[in-house]
Image 1 (cartoon, one colour):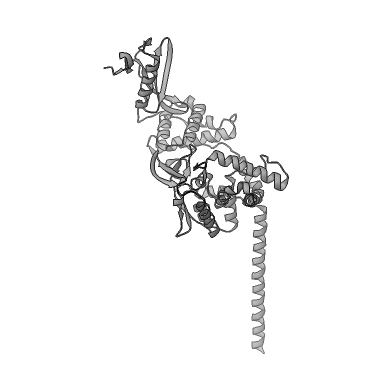
Image 2: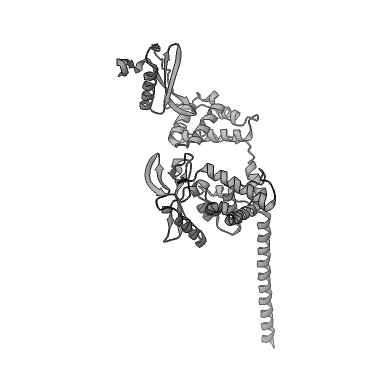
Length: 429
């Protein structure tokens, strides 16, 4: 039975004269409608069948129905039993259920197509450990690529284990990965701390960049840039002088409830604000128009409320692109005017590095790891440890503090011993 649709001029067209199937398009799983017209294959893509039909009908209405050839009947290939899925089926389910951000989704699909296309039709139950390790331990791969392949296949196998597609997950060897960013941070953390303090003072005194001072000062609390740009008036508690972090800025300049890229890692944390931070934010808010910055907050694509963002550019929430542009200019002018030096890749301070600075300073001040983890919003203590770097200056001051404490304690012991000896001699007399 054909579905008939009327067009202008009394023309009619049946959807059955096009072939509909699911495919990967621009890194995403989409529906595709394909038909042959005037000797050419024509295609339209959409995420839903309803949108696909609408796009298809608009296209046909535009070019007419002449010359359309009814495609041959598609022969459905036998599918793998759901109880014994292929790696490709498990991967597709993993993508569907984990609700990855668009950028991560595209990256995962690209990694899969580049690394595991040759074995994706193998059953997840029978694929061997050696087969997978031949891919992820390939010495011709760049170390970072091998690391991403290993992370992806482990995520897919964990999903298969969770869904009972497999009973035991194979213990895969991990490729050697040298984190050059971490090494660079370990070496340069002390310079980063000094530069960031200098940049803060420079911005505070420079009229051209004073509008960025509240943002840069909030970076010292270890907040992510997306969390800072997404701060709203509703997150600041006047009664307790606290800041609740419960949303982030998404790349399409919308606010999303949650502070991570994945929807299933939604977390909320509350940070006590020192008096000068609280006063700074309130003074900044007082300079804003009462109706400025009202922005919808979305959760799983649905608007859940509207809140007033406090960092605004052109009456809209300040974007990542503007922040990165102005942050680069601030450092360029700082090194040029203060140090008569040029900004290079070696002295450029990435915005995210301030989280490493905060973690390192908290460790130096003796703040417990669990407390630092809560403030930074990490999901595990191991991640907080990864962000913590010990500088030579910190080591020196710690040693000096230890020596001073030891000297004081030794002197107290000597005084106590002297007093006891004196008292003992007096009793003998």
